Each structure stands twice: as C-alpha cells, then as structure tokens.
Image (tube, rainbow, N blue to C red; front, side, top):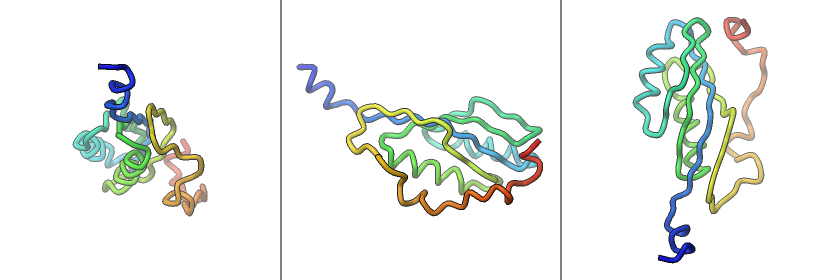
Length: 117
C-alpha cells in the first residue's frame, strides 16, 4: 500500500488537557463520572481543592468541543476548561473561536472562594 493511501486511511487525532474543578465534597463522585466517559483519562485528583486533571481523545475538533461540553454538564462540576490542545491530520482546522464558546461569561467574580486557595 502506498504511503499516501496509508495516511489517507488514518483517523484524525485530537488530544486535549482539561482542568476540571469540582466542589470538594463531590470530587470522588465527579471523578467516578469522568472515568465512565469514553476517551477521557484522569491523571490527577486533588481532593482538597477539587482539581481534577484529565486528557480527552477525540476524532475531530468538533468532537473535542462536544466532549468538553459533555464534561461541563456532569453533576458536581463547577468548571471545566481546556488547557491544552494537540491535533494531527485534522481536515477541518479551526482558525477562530467556535461559535459555541464565543458567548461564554468569563467573569471571575463568580469563582467560588475555595478555588482561589
């Protein structure tokens, strides 16, 4: 098989690093729910602050954003933000902020005090 055909048959790969913040009393429940998601791996859990570090694998940028939105809907999640993104062979690169994320409120006054420790 020619290299061009091999490369064309490969799926896209998108990996994102996501910081998930949970209410400290719900960290274990949130971690349990995260472990149940396809393509999500937990790398660190800090129970005292509610910080959970995960990576997510997806087949496209759109699927990656959908995964982030899915994490944000988990009961007990206070916040989830993509801190890192790597992609390979993505046929539809994103040059601007996706419309789904443009209207997000970045008002930090709403951050719970325990997250500022």
